[in-house]
Image 1 (tube, rainbow, N blue to C red):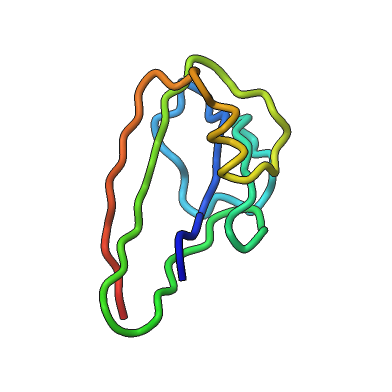
Image 2 (cartoon, rainbow, N blue to C red):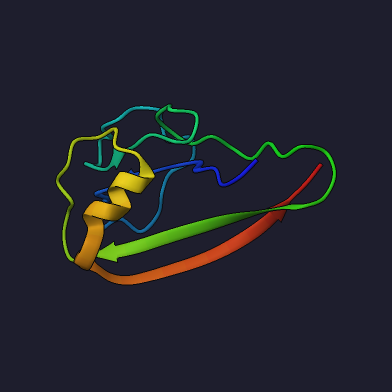
Length: 100
């Protein structure tokens, strides 16, 4: 119940145009990107797993920053948003629905 963070990834290099499939559950990625803690207190992507019944919405948020944040890998999403502060140049959000 409540809001779950399924993935935290940051410091993605500006020249990257896509994320590969099956990003490893490692704090520091070869590209220089870093991953933080999801709501399960783990590193990496945790996919949707709604209870049976009505559809659930999953929000995807992306932020373009003025530069790398430069904090160690492993922070959580709340901490990351707080640190980003006035570095946000643009942001976008979309959502998808999923149910079983």
